[in-house]
Length: 288
Ligand SMILES: [Ca+2]
Ligand SMILES: [Ca+2]
Image 1 (cartoon, rainbow, N blue to C red):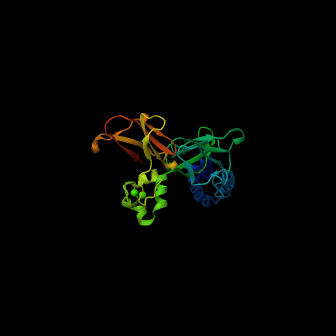
Image 2: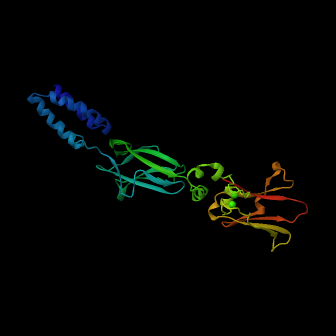
């Protein structure tokens, strides 16, 4: 009778989640050697059959796998760009997936119809960083029936490209690259009065003395206006670039020129101001 009781207990485990079942397996194994009588042996046979049906006797567990080699782990994603990572299970077809650790903007799509058995992490990540995602696939809807072992996926969501950082690496290396006094945005190692960030935006050489580019002229199309046109690097587009004005050169008096006075294209920035009497100073301002 004792043996029968154990058998019922193991049946109970089979209807529970796999995690629960595998935890019970060592317990059952330990009991089996104690079942020495012919009566006990009769009972151990169906127990063994039951275990095989869930792959636990052979030590196999039901696991999540990437759909194919194109879905790697770890995997790369780009901030604000569409992402998709497809996965399946090595045994039964999943009907539900539980998860944690997904970056904002991504969600799980359970495959149906011709995609039955395949699910995806899809969406557009809106936060960057390294995310350790845990997935568990379930045999039935509403997280029902057996489940797979937890699967860990690392998603590396890269932030926007940083053209200034790349430019810095093109111009310096080693200790100089690590030294903000040489390669930092506010440094001026060639002493031409143009800090590195300006040298980058204006496409100049940060190691040779450079002239401030651009011409300050009466607008050829409208002689009531001054026009100051400065060529810019195309990949400086994302930077905040504008003009400031000041009547006195008092450092506290610089104010932004209104957007109406600035024309910005991919390849240049143009200051357009009325030819008014009096004195005024202008400067180009760039912020990272
Ligand atoms: Ca410089
Ligand atoms: Ca220079």
